[in-house]
Length: 439
Image 1 (cartoon, rainbow, N blue to C red):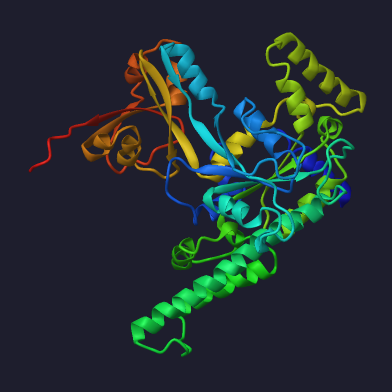
Image 2 (tube, rainbow, N blue to C red; image 1 turned 120 degrees about the vertical axis):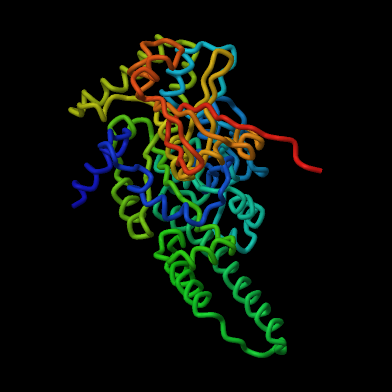
């Protein structure tokens, strides 16, 4: 069974080509977490992990610049460092290359580097309570664990054990949620007492809906399992949303390996991590290597040397008898950014013209008027219609010309009304008419 699991994890490294009609987000169960999220277009992901697991290094790499003070000291990141990273997007790149406008504005993902958490943080250990409030402020969590040995980078617990680290972090988050649930229950009882005019010492019954949701959350928290993985009805979700539980946020597990193990796409820890994640509600696991990514990033100004480095890494895998597309060395940074965005249920639509090509961020399931409102509130208020072209149609029909003429000729340029649900990659022109408001 171990061999099977390792093989599975070898193949998880590159993003797989999905059949049409499948949905990455739903496949990973992330939609379950999205139920509890805030409906906003500027959501953020936060890195959570023990000290010295590579959070600041990875945050720097994601932003493409050294924003966070990456120092080998357990509490070097006290204030959360917020960076914005460009979302890798081939469709956007194509539109920019076709229109060649003076202004090009890509989609971005906001990422927060939260200082290292340690055992006892929920009770204030380390810089505990401040960290947990920083985690509460983000919308999704990159759960970074260390699976590499290094004499130079100290481990807060003196030895490398990703399973112990996963348990520590998850336990701290669950303990904080347990404390929150107690407060939520007390507050609800107080509300009912006031409503009924009962004394403060009297015991009052909670509604079946509240009690049911509360009991389910408590059971998950007691088993050290994130609340977002549970089965809840819509009415229960609506109640739980207001409780502010940390473990209702989508989580992506990022495993920081040594460069050697990353090249061969295997590690003794990967099967154990997969087993742990599966037994704690499941989730997406992304193996990567900060050591590899940093070496690649450091060569960014020398494309020939960068290519040689990647070729050398691919050759090292070949020398071990590991061949095939999954063993071609390449950066995992784009995948991490795209996965974070998918976890938050965000997608892009584009506006394209001679002056500007821009990717706009919206929530999945967003209707055309709300998407128009992202550009300007007047566009939503005075929405008339949306003129929409599918990106694939534009690419296939435009012949590389910055014009919709051929798309229109082929009957692929559509007019959509208020009920239209925006699709990933729509190229849109919004028609609107705003009259001055009556005094």
